[in-house]
Length: 137
Image (cartoon, rainbow, N blue to C red):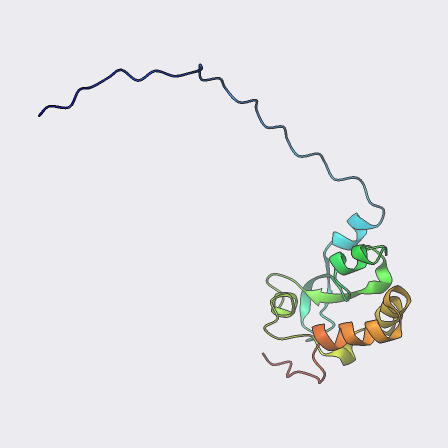
C-alpha cells in the first residue's frame, strides 16, 4: 500500500520577526568608575603586592536591595584580582571566605547603618570566616 503524498500549505506567509534592539546603556552612577578602577598595591587579605581592586564587604545586590549606595567607598577593602592572588575569587566562590577580623571598621559601620546591628552581625557571620585563615594558600 503506497502512501498518498499531499502538498503542504501554510495558513499564513512567513514574516520576519523584528530585530532585537540593543540593551539600554547603564545609567551613569556616581562613584562606580572610581570603585571599578584597579590599582597597584597590597591585598588586605594576604598582603601580596600586585593588582588590587575594591571588594564589596556587603555585596552590591544586598546594598541595592536595602536602598543603600553600592559605590560607597566605606563598604570596600582592597583585595587581589587576577594574577596578584586569588583572594577575591576564593571569597566570592565561597571556597575560602575572608576572615571577619580583616573587614575594615568603616565597612562594619556601613553595614550597621544599612541593616541595623542584628542583621549586620548575621550578614557577616554568614558571608565571612570567623577566624583568621592561613595566608599561605
